[in-house]
Image 1 (tube, one colour):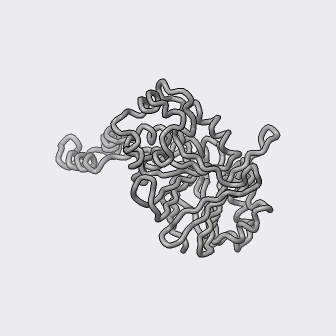
Image 2 (tube, one colour):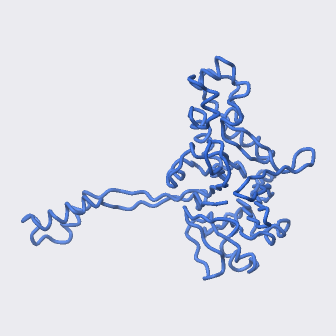
Image 3 (cartoon, one colour):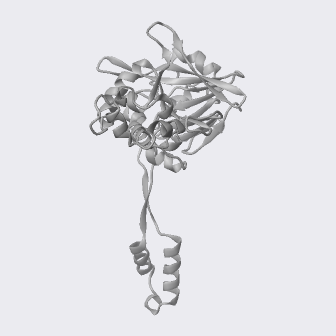
Length: 346
């Protein structure tokens, strides 16, 4: 299993602009200055003004926190690996492009909670896979030569939408599903003329975690000659309007016993009820706030440094920060940057 940090920054993180010139332009400027009487004895200010006129502005974005998990198993797209997004950021398009990927390369998504910086990419993922006639071999076979809207409307396929193997998976806790539908429903209800378009039209939904009958459902992913069992883990994130909003992280348990814990957004450094999960885990992806003024809904870097058990610290990969965290050498397993990846079991 390979986990890649698609984005590592906080919900309201923004990138930086910097002035750049291309290599070609730099050569042209140097040649012009070296060979033109116009610039003989020119001051630094004059030369800078020439360069500034040719300078371009480049944006270096800070993507919001989400991850890509790749399992060495057959994918829905007909070739491996199976790619699962853990949350989809405020807009996953450009972050995926930075990895050389698009919605075409994604098989499924896990949604931890319905905040925009975790579900904002759902519309892109749903619409682009729905209207892609080659998304999976099953999609191509089912669709034939028809346009998707005609297929759904004229044959009344909207009752069920495309077959399960022709659309991405969603793995989600039942308490997150309804808020997600309310949040993304209007944007997805956009297939011309087709009634009753819903989340199910676009995605194959798998409810995992504790069900209404008290049973807990997990999901097993094959990975080479082993397997990973994914289980949702409840964590308190926000109490708003006298109601709690949980963020359901995931525990990934390998058949060898190796455990990766991704609590996602949490209010506390280590919730008492989850202490055993933290101690059992071999690797922890730790929510980490670095803002000067604490929000109160994420663990702050100062608490992680000063109060987190050293045995837990050594397991942690930090992410979800504003400014890059300054941490004592050797205290944590690492601080993630966008594009960093790790392979498990180690």
